[in-house]
Image 1: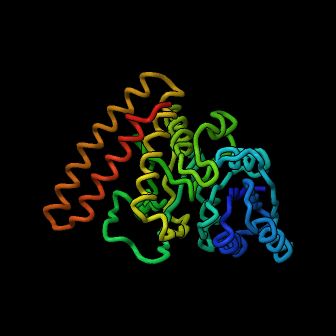
Image 2: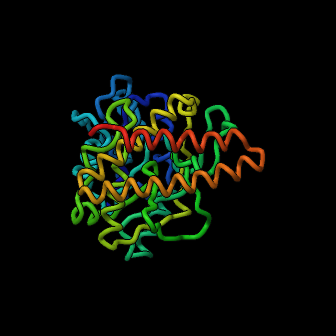
Length: 302
């Protein structure tokens, strides 16, 4: 088994069938990859969807597993434990892979032995339309990343997005799995588990790459674009960073605070650019987002 594709899901019956279909329609040989679906206590029709999928595609190496410990990190770690592949691929339950997705991931890791992990390009699939306040600086909020057509290394605490990422098995064997104190739990918005694992790899001197040809579409529901949703998400980003930093050291917390102040400086520059180019809604949202993240980081009690 060369690749293990791990899909963690929680109450996504509306999107899961298309996500699974995109994996069934890969150009990569079915015998060379497995699909591991981790159901994290869904209360919808996830199980029947997976049973139907298994019946429809008996030629695929598909396994359906329930993880009763609630939380995305628990689900991903269960996928790691159950997997058999040399490369572990994580894709969201509302992300739809291009037909050559697995072929491109396999080819990349075969040709780049020094790379321990990477992430591909993620295009937005807007359920309605892109909001007027959205700018390229906030696209990661909806799990979108496009760094161009060339392979490049992630540096300076930049990292792939969890909707489309892959690791050599040794990354987890050597540096540990996802931190179960971080990551989404049920319908909550806590995060930070991806940042945590990638920071560990970077701190150890490992190379993490952007894989431009490993492409997926990621659904952006309209509800994820409401101010209330973005506010809660941003506060949780700050809170999750505080939890991550506190688990390491006081110095790491201090560093996170300094980094946030630096981001305030960058945000003000971006704000002025948008303001003077008459993109007022984009300007205002940059500041709102920074305020919300800072609230979570500086004022949340952990």
